[in-house]
Image (cartoon, rainbow, N blue to C red; front, side, top):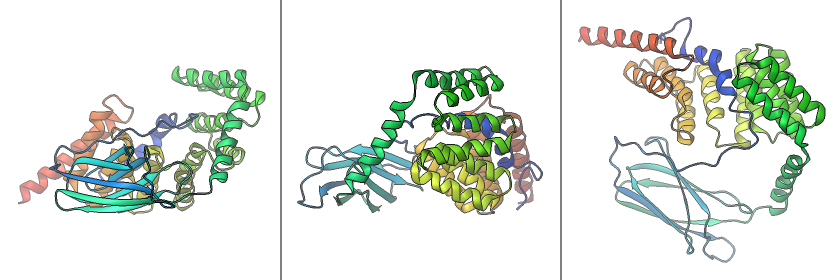
Length: 346
């Protein structure tokens, strides 16, 4: 299928402007997930309920997180069990749902439900995991955070201030000072890669991201996303996909990671997979504008102009003053012309 921009498609547009969004990656911690949004266009009458029990003695597992996800309905909900291990989510449209229960010290429990009527009831069991390994990994991260000197952290924060004032050279100076004070500061190396990417210094950025990966022992997803994004820019989509998936294993709640994955899958001519990745991003962050560009490009590949136009308009609504506004607006106008021609031929 011919894209709206045969020489400057939406995916390439993202490649040009993503470093701006990339500034969101280099943070010390990711925010916890908020309850998701459900579409107001689909009837929401059903409910899914259940009980979470400990596998060893069948005792109720209270105050554990239960997440429900539906790709079709665009729903992502998280709820805690009560003292009896019970949970209930109402106002759900019919369809297939994935249910995940997560609690520190236990293996993630996965289940599914096909909501065809008013309700579905489940019983889910939690199995004990290797608590010692979990504690050791958490302790490693905590020790690292405690080791960061105050001066190094101050320089790190100053780099964000410089970037906000469109001073990447100043940001580089602060980051180099932070690294000089604390050579194991992998978050600073990751942010260094972000700034170098913004400046077009890809070789240096690649080295910075790889250093962040090495210093963190592969535990810092932002560095993996940076590395994967650069591989994508260099025309190595298969290598990029491997690296991004590695990052998502560390942080499966990253809208950024899934959006970059969708861009890579478009490059690989896998629009169906790209659509799924974009929807994964939106399940985690419903107002993430760039994910709508991935959706638009996926529908463009498939020739679904009506859906392509809808996603482009969604992007413009979410980011009306963004750097990609003019090109996306042109894309909307082109799609409208195509739709008008198709209508005239009927």
